[in-house]
Length: 96
Image 1: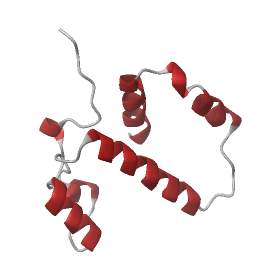
Image 2: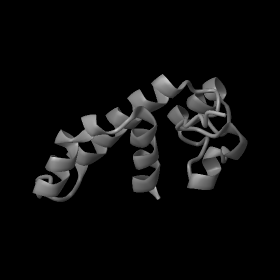
Image 3: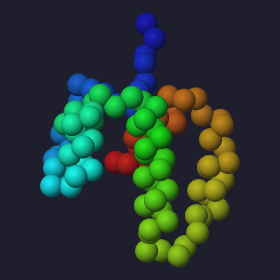
């Protein structure tokens, strides 16, 4: 039996309020109306695309002027060594 590794486990999806996000924000409200309270209806492709864009925006807005470390750059250059499921697992590990 093959184990399927996905970014989202719809059985475990928390509502956005769990993360202190509120429908008072129009974007959050619209996203929940489109993809559900736990964003469980969002495709993996859309999820990965948005994570990448949000992470880039957050990095640009970061208070630190510190560039990525050599270690982080090295890891980025070696991402091709990971299978897709390992990349997803790594995302999960880093956001904990």
